[in-house]
Length: 141
Image (cartoon, rainbow, N blue to C red; front, side):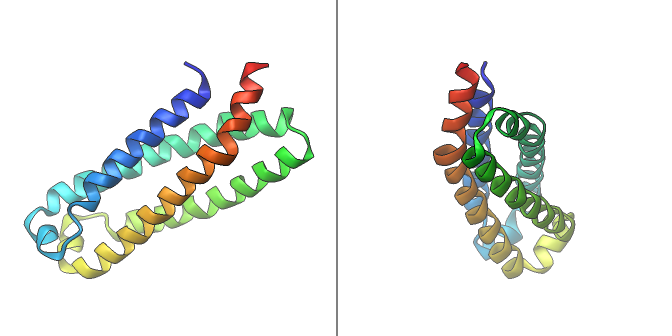
């Protein structure tokens, strides 16, 4: 399987988990199912770490090596952005590391989770439309 296909499959998995997590972000659902919420959250963070690592080790070096100056600029922009995303998700994961914390602060959890999911969705959309077409072109050569 080509790298771009693998990365796209990871996007589908991330979006599936995000969708399932979104269904549990009502305040009453959080209180009823904190373990389910926490498990979905753990799955999302684990999948995201793997995905970001694959981009760091495979996608970005390839584009920086083979790309023209415009591709390199775009790749650097994505690399800078992913650094910030990694930091934010790490802080988020630490803040919501226990089901008890989620239950004690459901409104904050729901708000922060919606923000994170929106950021993730936006990032995936940008990758799919801007970065992965470049990767497909370079993998074909």
